[in-house]
Length: 639
Image (cartoon, rainbow, N blue to C red; front, side, top):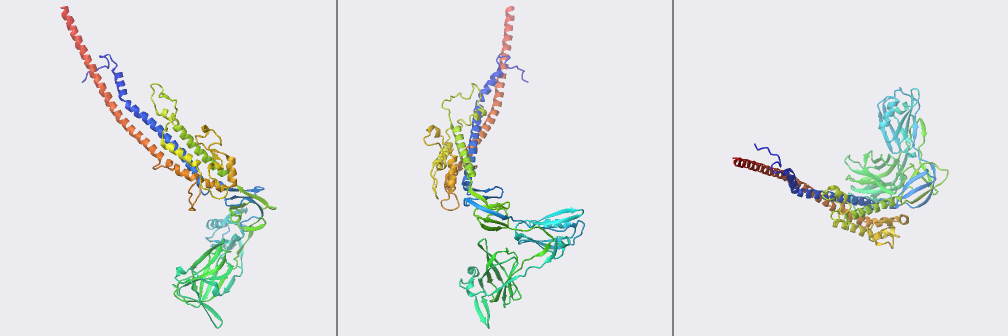
């Protein structure tokens, strides 16, 4: 067991302090690594901040490059307000229009008679119609409440259901069409008497008689239809024959033709019948269809036809009522020659159904005059097909014409450009501060004598030189200034070539170099507003223009700036991301070295203490021997 020793007792030296000083001296590399980490972390934050402001500039610039950037947006102002509202796109023609609203579109609303809440209504099926839409409802029987709930669930989207308590146990059921317009009038098919038992409808009104058209097309009204698809010559024609005053036509075993007919307005459930003496098997394929126009666009319905009782039949169950048909289509792939004797078109009369007990609100179209021209629409809001590029909302009837003014709204575009200029200047300002160096600074600046340089010191210098001399930052700023001062291709009338043409520059003409050398952009809002009012498309084209009509923006301030700053904002493989990653790796590597050196210091301190311990013990022994010898020598002299 080693002897107990008090440090410094024998040598008279503070060995603990000596060990501490030696360990601190040995730990100098750790302090250097920690200082380097502090600097790396501060520099990493500076790079991250640069990426943040550059990404913000990227977002503000990308907004300017969009095809929907609101440089040419227009607004609608009505006089007086509250009668007409709406939105106008850049394609809308500016100017004033006079609109007089005579009728607003209304939704059909009906109600029944008072019905006892406890009355049992029989089970059965019924249908509700509104325009071309219909809902078939199977009611399992019950009270007026049960019926209202069944209609609410099964006819959702077609009608809105209401149940009003009138007095005592009596309720009234109301139905309102979800869509407005006279063609959306509610009609009912109540073959089982369910709705009549609920006092909602009365007796069934007879439908109007159907309209029949009978004709036989002439040869000059017939053309081949899709010859490539059916593999027939493009000049194919049916064969016309006549005997004893009777005419018919023969269509080859493989043939496809379109037959011109007088333009006729069809309705839902219109039926086309072609009479024939040809007998067909169930597997024989015949197709029958029509060509019609909807919103000036030609559309087609072409389906497999049914064959029964010497007729080829097509029932247009889902045809949009009110559209006009001008051709009938027939394709024969049966392998049999078809003999056609006549063409019949049966247009059903108006279905009236069971008459509602009470009509609360009549179904009406909106009726209004635009510059004296009468217009009818089935709704009041979102009228996009009245004026080009304009969506109108009608709010109330007028006693006479009111004025609406369609004019350019520059505020949104100006606000976007302001945000772009602010983001651009923020990048320049941050870069200037982070690369600036105080030429009068000394080595001791920012550090007191004997103090350690920690991360707080470097964070305080984040904008004062942390990125000085970095070519990455220098290239970023140089490229941005080049883009902002370049001239770009022009198109259209009154074009603009440079940012200065729309009031964005680095300073007024004649400004001192000291005022403009930093390259900060200055916006003249009045000039920009004037240019946007004069020619908004030219302003938009300055930022982004499609020069080769491939639906992609090719050049312009925004396009070129986005391309330039892209490497600085990328997360994977970006210049700034690479810098941050490198610094983080250095910090991690330094931390590993610090850990290893700290382990070395522990063993080093232990080794020093052990050596000083043996030294103290040696000094103590020597002193004891010396004292022993001195005592013996003194004793010898005394004898």
